[in-house]
Image (tube, rainbow, N blue to C red; front, side):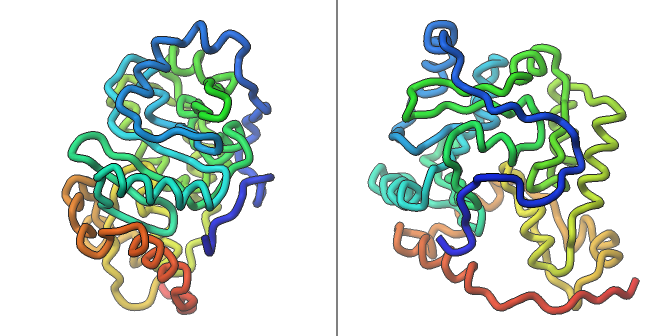
Length: 284
């Protein structure tokens, strides 16, 4: 997949010293977490070596919440493409496709197939996440959970611990509000880390902005491009040209043009082949 890469090591300096120990499956995960495994996999049609469930769905099963959607990660492009084809074979419809993910629905909870990076193992995914309360995965190859060392304790304490290595820190700022609605708290030091991570994001074009705030975590943000890009224009355009919108409002917008696996792959390839962004207008 053009533009996608296999995750091996950190690609840029971190703004956060939060350690990410190389987690391994707990020896007694299968026995201790049988109920969580049953809840997580109930109704899931996919599952093969090289496929990982990670993120919010894992938080939901370990905090006794209803699963809103499944985020699926892959070891390689071949497994991703096979899963997209299988989704169509299962009668699901594609609701959205971008340079980062492909979303499917059958009328219930949605499934997002992530292809912005590919990962050698489940633990490597955590380095792209924003909060430790999401750093859990189910590895279909192992048939077991892989948990970050702080996942269970931070979920139990409802504490947000920010990881500056996240790929999309601007969206993380909005996610703080979502987690606060669920009773989570965040310390001032963590908010400062988050702010510094946002400040370190290099936005030079409308493409860069859409890449950062396009909604990898399920939130959709619509960007209406208005002339040359500059940061001051974006800030003043929040709520008008840059709009937050419910993902359900766009649930069927791409159904006709993304009606088959072949069309989805063509659409993603066309995004990757888009011309370079115009130079940045530094004017206020």
